[in-house]
Structures are given as structure tokens and as C-alpha cells.
Length: 348
Image 1 (cartoon, one colour):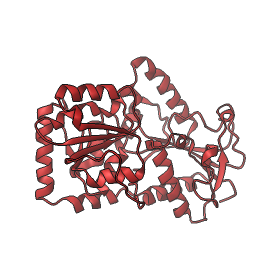
Image 2: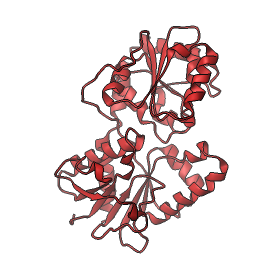
Image 3: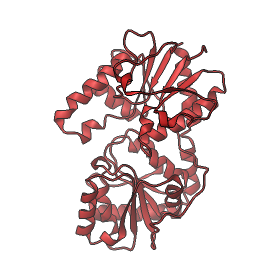
Image 4: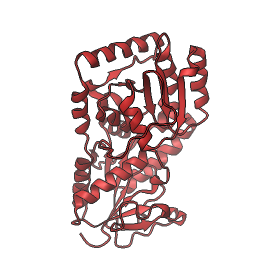
């Protein structure tokens, strides 16, 4: 490839500890490893992240002015990693664009008055793209149901499993009893407020990690209503060292989200050999397959507790930990990088 051939957009890494941060981080590292110096890739990053992918990697630095005009001289392929990004090559440029679509969650978490705005943004970016990638078959179906693809190819490339090899440290909030764990930005779409229902009539504790919002109050109200407030811990954003302590020590990972394009935390928990309990909505049944357990669609408290107990018994009786680890290992950033590199080369 010629100098400056491919640019990998890491603009969303400005939001640390978000799903998009980890997507760009893990895929970017895998692209460098798989390219092995044969493909020329530059990373488009906020200035504070220059050097993130190593001193030998090449960088293009983001500025707010790029929303008005994004200079792409010498760039033949621009990989836009966020579906409604404002940082796209101008239509007059000869740069080919690959657009990764993670989800259409705005259809489920925003008011209907905002749907038109987000649909218009996504349609604009799809129109500018040459190739579209969805991170799950569910995301592909959602995209094709609401956006005019205009005959462009849509590929499904699954996210990989984040393989953590760093230190594991006990967190400040360390439950005294067996506990359930979940992680994600604490927003209504995550549906975390149904989780305190799992603690009624037992001694379990619940740890919810992730950047908080006003929605946290609803979780607290539900915990109070269930009489389990003292056993519900909202610990905020946490380090990887703490996250993997929780993942390795929890009784189960619980993820009742109702709007997911993939669900990276699910695969992370599975990689630790943990039973995962998911909602039956959006992409989660596709990603969890028959290796996960599922809550009833109404999130009825009594039903959820029965489903948790039955799932934990099944997990222990069938000794499923290694089976679940092996399933998680099939979601590979190495394979995702190989597929993206193939798309880059197809556009050159």
C-alpha cells in the first residue's frame, strides 16, 4: 500500500471506558498486528491519544474544524468506526469509505421526535460510504429495515473478545456475600433497574459498574422498593484491574439490556467462564446463543429469580465453565482485523 493509504478513525476514543473506546482500541491493535507492516494504516485520534497504539504507529490528529472539512490528501480508504460520526471525507474527495454500524439504539432509547434526526444522520453517512459493516446480524437487519442501502454491500463482522492480560486488583467495594455483576453506561436502555428484583428472598449482592446518570435514581428506587437497597452497589466507572476482579469473582454476570448492537461485556464475562443471564431483546440472543441463560421478556421478578436459580444449577451440574470460555474465544479481534483488512484491500 502507498503512504497514507488507510485511516482508521478513533475519534470516539475520547470517551474513555465506553464500548466504542474498547472497539477502536482492540480492533486498532489487532489491525497493526495482522498488517505486520505490509499495510499502511494511520490512526485518527484526539491529540491526547497520540502514541496510544505505539510510537512507531502513524497518527492523524483530530481538530473540531474537521467537522467542516476533513483533509484526506493521500488517503484512499477512510474507515469510519461510528455510524453517525460528523467526521467524514467530503463527497468531492476520491477517498473510499467503510462505515461500521454498531446499532440503531436511538430507535429504542430516544423520543420519537429525535428519530428523524438520527435517521437522517445515519442515511447521510451510508450514502457517503462505499461499504457498510454491521457488528451483528441483528444490527444488519435493523439497518436495512430503516435505511436505504441503495444496493451497497453490507458485511457482518463480529467484534472480538477483549483478552485482558493485566493485573487484577480487589476494588474498594468488595461484597461480603456471593454477588451478581454487570457493567455498562448506566442508562435506561441497559434496563438495570430490573436487577434488584433478583435479590429478594436471598443473600446475593449486586454490583453495577459504569458511568452513572440520572437513571441511577431509578435503580435506587427499585432497590428500595424491593427492600434490598443495602445490597445494591453502584460503583461508577472502574479500572480494568477492578473489572476483571468482579468478573472473576462474581456468581453470575447479569445483562438485561433492551438495546444492544453486540454486547461486548457479555463475551468478556464468558471468557472468564461465568454464567451470563441476558434479556431476549435485540442482538443478545444472537451473541449469547445457547451458551447463555435468558430472563423472561416481561422481567417479572419471581420469574427472574427462578430463571437465575435454574441457570446457576444447570451451570454447576453440567460444569459449563470451560465450554463457555471456548465459545467466547471464537469471537476474535484477530479474525475481525483480518476481515477488515480484506475490505480495505478490496477498495484499493
